[in-house]
Amino acid sequence: MVYDIIVIGAGPAGLTSAIYGRRANKKVLVLEAKSYGGQIINTLDIENYPAEEHISGFDFATKLYNQAKNLGAEIVFEKAVEVNDLGKEKEIKTTKNNYKTKTVIIATGSENRKLGLPNENELIGKGISYCATCDGAFYKKKIVAVVGGGNTALEDALYLSNIANKVYLIHRRDKFRAEEKVVELIKEKDNIELLYNSNITKLISNEKLEKIEITSNDGNIKTINIDGLFVAVGRIPENQNFAKLVELDENGYIVANENCHTNIEGIFVAGDNRTKTVRQLVTATSDGANAATSAIKYINDNKNN
Ligand code: NAP
Image (cartoon, rainbow, N blue to C red; front, side, top):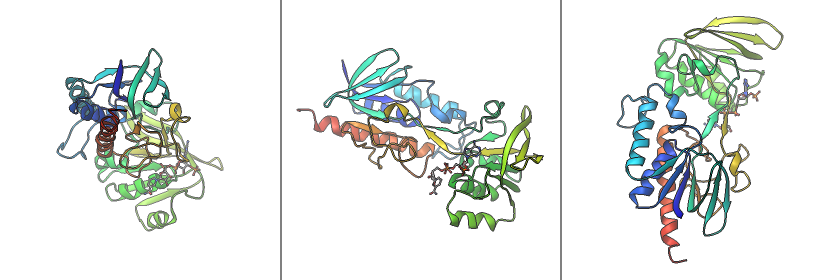
């Protein structure tokens, strides 16, 4: 049996691809290594998805999953470990099976790099966030900290400075990696306090995050009270299993523009693991639609080959 489209990843991008594929009457299989929903499952309240004023990440993902399933997409929980381009057909090896397909949509997303502190995972949604634009609104007039020194951290700090009363920006070196113009904007803000040469060494909580311990590079330790911590220490695209197959940029993202074509015919990419500037729920679902539309066109154009 040869599928028309195999989607790797059952996050918002992958499930949207499955919906579009099924609505075009294509045989669609979705492979998911963990659980459906991707990163959005960790968001308590989504407030920035058009026409959904409030919805939990779990409810959103479940609706999307059911929609794809009800339209006839097969969804199996197997990790894709290898994709081979056999020309007209592609082969996908999972930990359990081998599948054949005319097209592949890689929608494996990206992971937030973690600080690696002991209770970090337990505090996600309880004071720790990896997305200022998703969760910043919960910290109106509160005290927050951002950790990181790249564009994301500095843009997050600027965004949060318009919502929270006070923002600590904690960076492990004395120079930011972010673009100079963003650094200048940060320095103009009265309510952003810069803590250079500093690392967060402890997360202190009582059900919710309450304080962080900061250790400076010269060994000084201090504790500050905060309501929220935004971790922006980079992302890790989950493209490791495709690195030999498709072109990646220097940060490991699959190179593709809005039509979601990779450099290999019949292989498409959708969501946070492709090169782009805005990585949000709305752009992931948008990619899902674009990648599936490209895959459907590819299948229809190659029908008689
Ligand atoms: P990034 O540029 O990789 O920066 C990650 C930051 O986190 C670095 O400052 C790094 O410190 C720090 N860091 C890494 N691991 C850490 C750890 N364990 N503990 C503490 N700090 C740690 O990541 P990003 O800011 O998410 O940006 C990713 C890419 O997207 C970049 O190319 C960026 O320019 C781009 N981007 C562009 C825009 C825009 O154009 N508007 C917006 C956002 C992102 P060091 O500096 O010491 O390595």
